[in-house]
Length: 408
Image: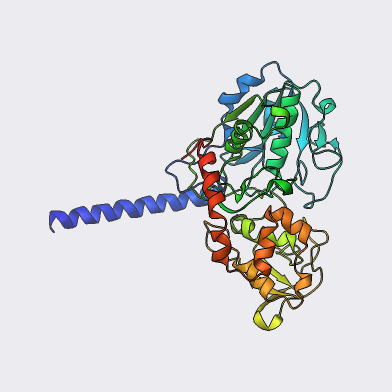
């Protein structure tokens, strides 16, 4: 056997051994595999980097903005950040809960009241009820606010609006805010229509694209740096960084970030199918494939070979088109995307038998951030023609975004 042949055989053996070890690791440690990426080293979320932030809590009363994704990972699972800090004798006084609640069980858009966490006995302040910004009274006696929520990188996903309102409240009350950063599973691209100032609201508070390609820590720095807080305020902001993260890494969430985003496919399709929230078309709510399909009873059934019937379920007590046979498309096998797609929205509109039934104009404008997108679709523009109209604003945003990026 030649030296070259021996060398090739040795390399092949090493590759096989490495692959075998990887396979064993995956089967023996499911939680570790859930948060594994295509990076050489696994990502370490900021909540796990306790040495970076525990010294900041010494002798202080803490308020935490958190939900079910606010966890510290372990080899065999995870512990909620609040439980972890209490076990370390940190003086956690109060929890502030965003849309869907502290345990993540409320429907989208469902208001919930203040209460008490049955596990810890801590008071829970709803930021999706009477008020969406913590009041001066609710912040009284707190020395620092911790914000730790898993985002999905889409403007109308309301957690970044909650972040901005909490930063505003902290700035007004001279309370420092600490953001524990987490990966953005849609952080690998920037795309979509840019929100117009006149349509600002809880589904978009600032003039950013639909998909902005930043972690929640990077975005917090942008809010501060661009002067987006009212009255010229700036928050006393600290961001605890991620380890081993880049924007191009594929990150798999081990906990669903909200009731109707159950897996990686739905997260990746959410920027595109989330626009259906401003229409009368069902986007999978009331099924086990939320944001992985779309359909409606009023779409032309002759053009589709897929149908389903939405039923009330976890996270969707009254889904659109409830108990009706919906004709549409199954997208659950879609490969990872790196842009917003309008093809499905245009398809559904084209196949709507009565066009007046399609858009809920006010809601669609709030989701799109602009009234132009509805007009473009109604006028019959192609996807490419619509996307071409976004490019100048996307380029301008990318220049601003670059100033606040922490990761490659």
